[in-house]
Amino acid sequence: QLAAIRDYYECTFLKSTAWSLLHPHALMYMRQRQRRIRDGLATLDLADPAKIGEIDVLDVGCGPGGNLAWVAELGADPKRCVGIDLVPSRIEGARSRNSNMRWIAGDLLTADIGGEFDYIMLLAVLTSITDDGLKKALIARCFELLKPGGGLLFYDLMCRRPHPGNDHYKMLTYEEAEGYFGGRETRWWRRDYLRADRAKRWVPKYGLPVAELAQAIGWWNIEASFALVRK
Image (tube, rainbow, N blue to C red):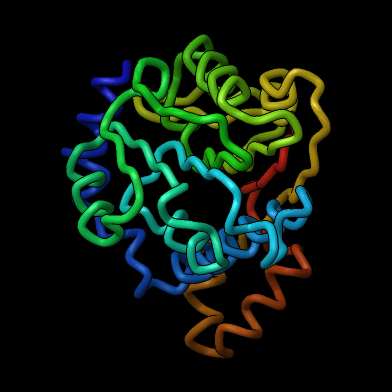
């Protein structure tokens, strides 16, 4: 299935401009993701200038490297940041932007990642995997790579009842995710993104701060959720 996922991203997903940051919803989602990356660090007591330069960070499904670039902007040492992605072209792009980080094109289950890590990010990855066994294996591998007391920052589009999915996409239920987390201490930020249609209308009309206030209220949000899971 990993080859099919890579081919889908290379041939279909990456050719779309739907997630260009010029679109209001994509910009809002990026800003909220950055907030939650910082919130995850704060939950682990790592959002501290005296500590953040000493942590090891891994981004699974890192894409063009924006999440790790943000962690470095917060103060992490780029040399202690590692990104892995199935799509070689995305890794090439990430490496060209941040050559002082370590970038790996490959499969988390078999690649030589190094580690252990204080903070692992697994953002918008599991919905691209339709095989439940593979999802379970990836989560288990993340916990293997975490230091004791470290944290896994998870994000995906969730559902409250089982989702039938298709060949390329399947949402998770909260119960399913909690099962993968194995009863570990978890902090959730549920329904965290404003609906895209509202963002597209409200950002041009009222401005980004008003749209983000509506997102913070949560009434018009989608079932897109983050979780910080401690090892």
